[in-house]
Image (cartoon, rainbow over all chains, first blue to last red; front, side, top):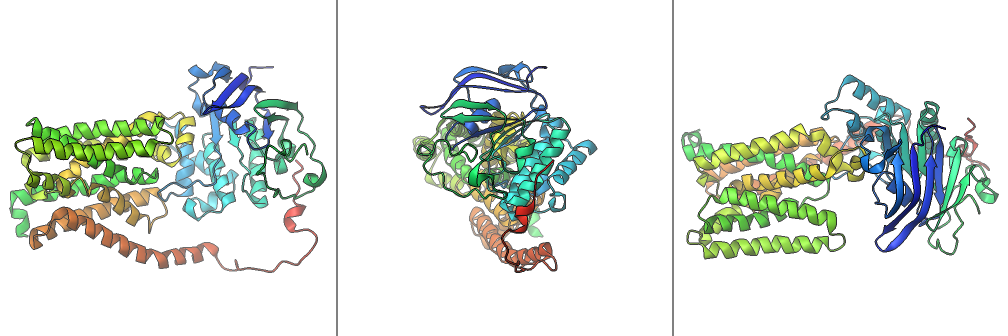
Length: 255
Length: 299
């Protein structure tokens, strides 16, 4: 096997005084699609955010594309979709303006060339938002916001796509669009690491699932089969997650 | 146009024009990252610089610029490291800056209450030829940054975390925004005064976004509004003998109200155009499964 794209070993991290990762190993190879699963507070979001350096590791090692994280500068190879409910800022911006900001890693001094505009347009088409390019992001629905955030990550034509709960608050129709967009990326050989609450429409794409619980990996292998009510087609995930401690395994996958 | 025959009014109008362009140009980034009041804070801190300038018998504008820049850097550092108590630390800085300015001014020989007033509320007709050189240099710097780096600044102010993962030097760019805002505050100090400078950074942007859908248009319209209100405000203060700073700010607010009134029918029209014909509600035939349930993801 060639060099892993992401190699996280014995990673520990804390938010404030609370340890959130307690020795996580996560290896993702080129072309793989890996889902990080777990209940709320299991550390899955912290794990991906530590992979992109947004949460500092207190212990363990991390390398990206075979480069030790400390020396890693090749950010254009990574597309990141943060966990957001909105793509809007304090000032109006069009869908195209927001997606174009995802191209900055590939432009010299922020000057847009023909290839850059084409990449932005292609990213918009992938998520089915090309006809909304000139609309303000303030006018979009929740699912459309998420599509814009994903198009922004795709605009940089990344080799590795990292997504934090891209399906949160997204209607089924948008989920289908996003699944199709992702399928095309995967077909082109893009490596994907994504945090999910449930496998949902992405299930057929996922090669491997890593399940976290209390900051530790408890499963690393084929995606667990959904059973019971969760296995029904079109199952809408509506049950509350207020009490994560009482239901540590209600990931929607293992229950 | 007898107003243009006086050298002091020529300087006043040029200074007003420059402030009308630069204040909204940097203000839009502050509004975008939801720090609309940062300019106000910097204005408070800059007053200590003015006081220090009087005490040391040097140019108040340059000392104010230096102190405002230092203050804005401290504010950025507080934003990075101060987590929950950050807002209290900022309050300390703002009011400390204000009190320090008043105190230093009182200790100096040249600084009087009248002088304090001109810096707090502006005194555009007292802009000297030396002031003009300073204003040109600083304004060129502000425009080079706000226009030249617009894509980078847009990305950082829109989504800081995303910008970091793009590999942008986010801390440096944030510092640049803060320092540019500080420089703009001192440029605008003579025109609208330290207490009202933030208004010119924020209100034209707020007015522009009532009618625009894109960042680029918001930027252009905000600068246009800035120019219109600073020029008309300055001219009005000449003919009617009212304070320039207050006139400019009240004009800006009036434009904001007008744009807001204009925006409601415009938004309606746009919504109608976006919905298109035949996009109304239809009652779906009740059944065991909704169409969305049938979608499969085999592939």
